[in-house]
Length: 249
Length: 247
Image (cartoon, rainbow over all chains, first blue to last red; front, side, top):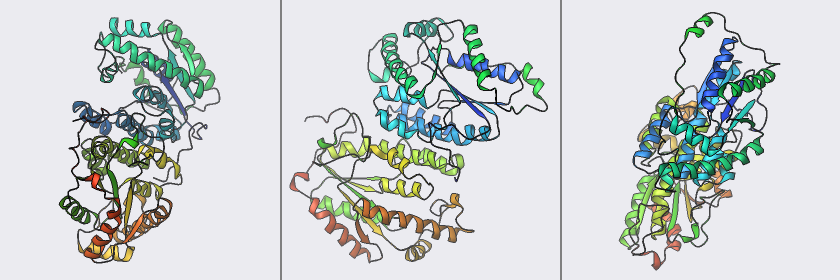
């Protein structure tokens, strides 16, 4: 417990690199991060991947809370912060100290956009995450709401999820309409976050390949001075590993 | 609670000045006899016709199971722990404490956020963060701090339920065995409580006295808060955020 990561908004002192992606559901950020992951590994880097709200302990609790419909904006927000704290301690900090590249699908900026739309204080949520390690690169995949909707409806999933459509907020009984209202509000919060934290904005309406090329170019530039921890043995197997389908968010 | 307020950045959907009840927190380190005295206080108040609910640390519907799991070793860092406590507290605040206060109940809280602050302070160099986290907490009308010295506490705990891992702060590795750890950890907590007693104006009650004397002291501190308007309150609704039913 003696480990004290430096306060946020300051560059971290660790040997590794932390790269994060943000964007609303349907922005394609997870696909882009997965492609980046593959590329980094093919270049021989040691990469660790971590995902928003994925720790077992917190997922169980969130499930329980959703079932009784007892979650409030405050408890929802605190649960996500708990998940983040636990992942920072167990998943983000060790690989960073070991000099690896850590890829995070969603980071504290998700909370700054989404939790504020759900009704928590913008000042409070920023203080809550003040212990978070500042990423070396934070990408924001900017997409108009209609593009996100048509991707989600026409593409890999074919439907919205209850919470990503903000159905708990009683905005509109129609799920698509509710999604449009809820995610539009999140988009406008993201706009503020992008400016405040200088996120790298990517045009997420472009082709997957064009976006990925741009992302790789930016990452390569940022990694110029990075001393990679190259794999020693067994790395070749990575090229035969089948990559999972992009996970629904 | 005319002057009700939050410690920091409050709940955006609730104006605390609408709350009619009284919030009374009973603080003190482990093994000081808080729950026994709270039971007696509840009895005393109910006999006089006041509506009372009690709420206990880590006892929320949402989090009690999760915190048990975490203590079994799934989470070890101080941020997660403080945030787990904060989530538990928020769940109770929004589903138990606020609805009860809104209906005019007296809420007796077995421990309050000061417990979380003390536990985080002894684990951290940064004392501001945990205060910020609990910014949404209501400032109680009264905080009674049952104070005990560590020598007396040690004897009392050994005689009753024994020392456990977390009450000994074993994660901090303060001593080579349970006894040394417990003593050092509880001394640090008492030190933090003493500092907060000044800052937050606790009513300090000497918990080395006999149970009868302690109970009498608690009652004398609570008595001035009691007004006739608190008698026979409406049943608390379990629905937060919506306004209380105007029946």
